Image (cartoon, rainbow, N blue to C red):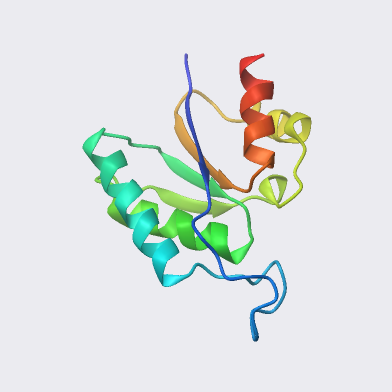
Length: 124
């Protein structure tokens, strides 16, 4: 059985140095970031993207991104934070975690350059 896997970087987030941002973990999406994620989600809906679950980094900006996407897709997939997708995640560690998933359609929301490395790892 094949698995459809969508990789998505979080939307535009607050600067780490922004007053009240609370450090890297707590950085939220900006208004512009939320708007762009909603636009991307509308495109994914038009393409009939239907992940069963959206797995996300537990960082606030990634969780917000995943929740916006989930609300905008026709099948309203569940959103599940996964430590393996935290900022700085290694591609081999994420691949080890992915092996536990059974044939379905999933989306991973995380950070760059981690997702780029993961994509390279998966196709090479």
